[in-house]
Image (tube, rainbow, N blue to C red; front, side, top):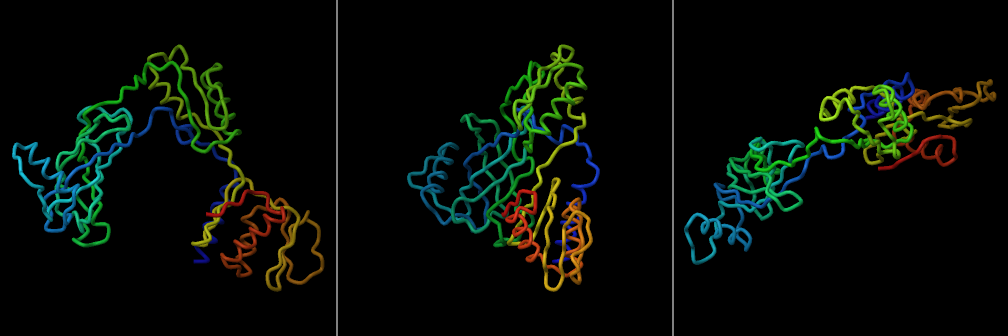
Length: 334
């Protein structure tokens, strides 16, 4: 565990402190309105081999209503261990068109022990506005799990939903576009604004804050916004990252990123001492390892690794360095 842990930290930090690399705007921002929309519905899975719900008002009433819809009117509630009540969910992709197929997820809401071998009855799926955007049905798959196996009450139907209604965005007619940074940062937002304006040859982009850039569609791209976005998302920008160390104490994992620096300090571990100074000679103590203040956290990790420091010790050292103000970075525990 120790070797994997230290290697992970070393790779992350060396990438952070090497030459900065540029990123495509496509990987840094999302476009307002271009997103998935969650859909949800209630349905019945039939054809189970006695592994369905043991009964209950919801399942029994639903079965009775289903028979009524099919022209048969039972006088009493219908109960069957071959049926399970389920919640059906899906994501409607941006610009999805009528007739397009989407993947479906089915989750049992009763006491069914397994959905293996079942078939989902026709189920309308609604959006947040209460309108039906898709209809799902078909034989379900629990991913090869055997009956009674773990998670057998959750299943999927690949391409099991059909889009019945579109969300009309009129994207190509937009006069302005809002870009949202996936990782808000003032420096990155300013660089994005500058790069877009330089490449488009005018003042078209305006950074509103650390997470928002408003873009006016240039006259030569009016009613051709798709081409504009295709060009825009391939511009490259050097993104900036705040100095930050994230520690997962449960797994002993540390991930560090950004320009993390160390101030003048001394770290004692057993009979070994690590000094971070301005490059002067050691203080005369035995077993002293010197690091200059320009050293990165990866340099510190390599020295700590050499003297046999465990992941638990590293976490404690980082926390102490941060508390003393020696480690110039944000420290987050998860």
